[in-house]
Image (cartoon, rainbow, N blue to C red; front, top):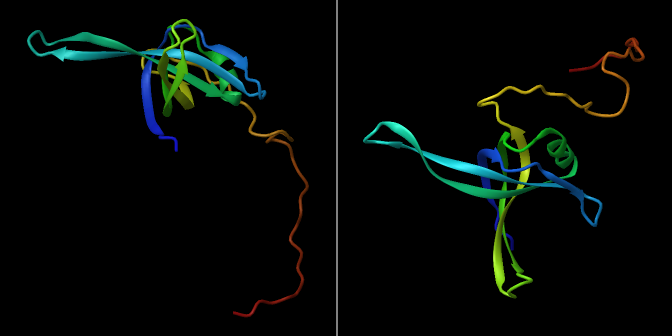
Length: 147
């Protein structure tokens, strides 16, 4: 049984996203988000940095391509997904290590400090929304409906 812990984080990319394709053919993008904790110093009434936590994030499929094409190091992002824990054996020491990753359901650029332009993708293949289709007029059948 896998424990899913939903999380939402806001922070800055520490590097450009790494984009690739897994063995099964699924696209992925990996990146790290630095989340800075700021606190108000009661004595000085000034905001101070209180530490940084780094979160590794992975996103899949079409969103992975969008992340790799759109986001760069230093960009402010919002990430919503599930926190997942895992283990692996370190090749050098042979010790078992633990990992913590966020498997993202949604990644977006934050508009807190800058603006962006959104390029919309078509919702489905097919005729354009403005195209006219066949027109069907209602046909009078002479039938009545009893209520």
